Structure formats: C-alpha cells, structure tokens
Length: 245
Image 1 (cartoon, rainbow, N blue to C red):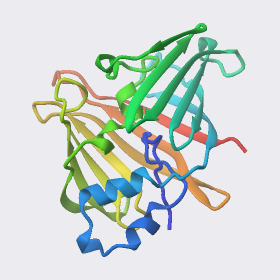
Image 2 (image 1 turned 120 degrees about the horizontal axis):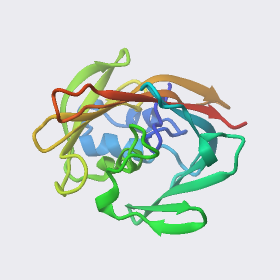
Image 3 (image 1 turned 90 degrees about the vertical axis):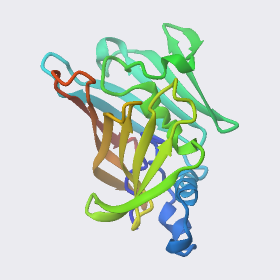
Image 4 (image 1 turned 30 degrees about the vertical axis):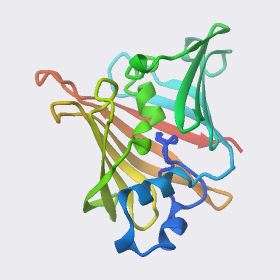
C-alpha cells in the first residue's frame, strides 16, 4: 500500500514518512479506531529513517521566481537549506531547522551564520515570501489534544477519514484544522486550516508521489492561501521534491 503523502512531517506536512502507517492501522479494527489512533499512526510512520530531497517552491504569481531548496527529513528533525539569490548553484545562505523535543516543536533559523530560535508568535510568518509558513511545515495540529473523526469522504480517489483538530491555544496559528487520512494507505492526503471565524485560510493537497527503494514519498504538493479580504484572490504555490539518491 502507498503511504503517499508523508508530507514534510508534513508538511509537509508532515506526514511524508517511509514505513506505511497503513500497516499500523490494519492491525486494528477500523470501527474501533479513534482520531487519536489514526494520527498517532501517521505521526509514528517514519521510524528511524532519514531522507534528503532537492526541492523547489513554485509561487503561482507573476513576478515571483521558483525557490530552490534542500530538505532533509528524519523522525525528529526537518532541515531546510536555501541559497543566495535563490539560485541552487550559489552557497547556502539560510538554514531552518525544525526539531521535535519532548513532543514540542523548536524552530531555529540560521541566517548569515547567526543562529536564532523562532518564537511561537512568528510561526505564521511566510518563508521567503511564499505560501508556506513555519506553522505549515511544523504541522503542530497532529499533536493537538482531543481530535475527532467528523466523517468519511473521498480524497485523492480513495475513502479518507476526515479528522478535526482544534487548537488549544487560539492565540497562535489556526483555530482548527481538518485533515483527511486515506483509509487505504494511512497517509495524510489533504489539509485545510481555518481561522477563528471558521474561514478557510490555507489548504494543502498532494498532487503526486514518487517511489524509492520500496518506499513512497511526496513528489508534488499544492498549497493555497485564502485571504480574509473577500476582494482579494487566493494565492498558491507548488512544493516539488526530488529524492537525492
């Protein structure tokens, strides 16, 4: 079975991990599974493996050029490397590290040799003016308490549990997140983030996946940002990953 998203932990989600969570879920009777069980399987699906990708973020906006980056994923760390002038042949000029310590996310930004921890209040900042934020890549919603299954819907051609995760700290990040987890693969295939007014502000959807050494990884993900101002149009970016072999 394909553990298709493995989304950057998460994102990115998220999320994009190697050992199929479908195996973990199949050991339980589907009718007995809770939302917490399902998200725990997604969260634990990576094991001890590590994988590096060459990636690029493609903003779908006139005047914005693609942004190359390197991504390294492991069970406890996501490392992003960006380049001078957003050119992959140049030197790395910025490193962003997401570390999971005691089930808490710690973000460190290293810019021009200066290392600084990122405060929670800055998690909603855009990374390099793209549609991706630090919150999106950390995907903290997987750890939020008391998630609920609110239905079963079609997502990416398969039946998926629709799980609602409510933010215990409404002053930071999304008010709640709806996440779709494939019943066939156990993978996170779609996510919508909402504000306190129940307005959608961000969506993620997996477009394609790739296989390497028997494992499945994210290849292309579409990210949309919805403005609170109804007069403005949504913006979108694509995240594309190529496995470093």
